Length: 521
Ligand SMILES: *[C@@H]1O[C@H](CO)[C@@H](O)[C@H](O)[C@H]1NC(C)=O
Ligand SMILES: *[C@@H]1O[C@H](CO)[C@@H](O)[C@H](O)[C@H]1NC(C)=O
Image (cartoon, rainbow, N blue to C red; front, side, top):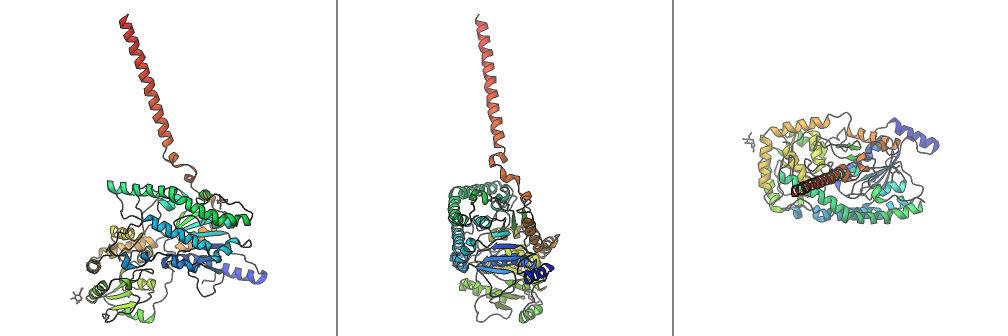
């Protein structure tokens, strides 16, 4: 940890007065029990600690060391709450990836409830002596954690692990226009055909509809059951869920334009993609460094991420992959969770791999991954082109996006994986376009005014210092959707036209009646 003057000041204060000063008190809520979410949460927390703030961290992954200014609130039993069907590769093979929305909603709602019911969390929420300047909560497919901010009477910030979408932007501004905005839960990349445009619109409307009519009351109930008693005990009134869920000061998005679409963003959407990557990457372990230094034909690094395990692949595919690797002149480093007998000479398996250090080595020429956003982010950071084998949620979108940008190739997770992967590897090794495009993306990614960690700390301090940054709130939140679309004006014009045409018709009728009468006389 860097010893900034703020940290020193904090220690001096603590020593002299036994009180906290200099830093803010921040509650970070990152309850999702998955490796990539842990990495993102730890990144946020570390930046805040380094800036001299005091962090209370709700996480399923507390560490066994004491860090000054850091207090863990462990929610270890969240770890059982990710559906096994989502982390076993074998069960995910040959499957349609576009996810069942209800499964995701229910799983995340359970996780939210489980977090709030946890004894450690409950004790924290109910303790009248606890107070915070800010809550940063990971979005869990519902907005129930906005209640945590109400419990401590402080502003809150959402952390979104994904690219901005109509869902996240709808919380601080308004939904994106489906005619030209790709959706991370679907695969189509704009420019859309007529049918794709229709499909995205249908998806967006049905999701908003379902959230409004089927999910909102479930969330509301959990919100009331959890936070009403807390507010009562603290002699406060709880704002309605409908109001509080749209009251975030900011959204931090794990996004940067080099990683995704150029989406129009409101003032209080702050992209901090890449914040989890330290400016100084840890050195490689000695043996691994030797392997990579000696790989004169380059290293291909293969990892299915922190949740999925390569060992769960069917045996036939594992054998076929080894054969393909054996025929390559490159060195393969494979994150693989158990020993493999008769390993080819150029293949090295690692139970746990220091991914950043491997990608940062100049000999690393290709990443094969599951298309997770973090892997893609890290590949762009270090300028290593990639092959994606998408598995679930946003992977398919990430993979298709990398293909459309010429920085990667996609391979489907089917029984034909090995043959498809062989073709993809040869394409990537023989066509220099991927490397060049990836270098460009990497330049755009790094060419920012400030590194994402600094941006994060700046906005956290800004929100606290301005008591919730109300000046950044979008006026779009204040008016109903029909006014945004000028449907009231359209209605008025329509009624006016009908009225005018009615009057004209009446006039014509009178005139012709008059003419008829005149003729008869
Ligand atoms: C919304 O947030 C602001 C700033 O944090 C706060 O002053 C206000 O009370 C909040 N409104 C509700 C309904 O909680
Ligand atoms: C490996 O290297 C040898 C000798 O340089 C070359 O003949 C062969 O084509 C290479 N194999 C592949 C798969 O690139």
